[in-house]
Image 1 (cartoon, rainbow, N blue to C red):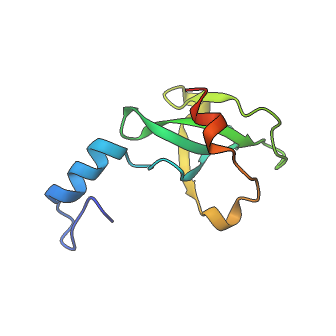
Image 2: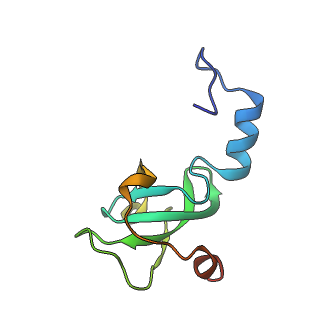
Length: 100
């Protein structure tokens, strides 16, 4: 929605935001191909492949020490956004950012 205007054409402001932040901005949550839920910590090498830490495992349980996932790998690619209200895990942002 930020990237495209009402006519479906990219706009300059939206393009600049996507170029800077990526499609998934830091602090947002995503579901990975392996069914884990991860938090985005920064833009990756591609706009659609952010740097993420998995915080919820495949079985829906919180992961103790969130592993860094390479979303360029097929097993960990982003499949969908996850609304923040659906995530019940408290994230220590400072600790995660210190690991990147």
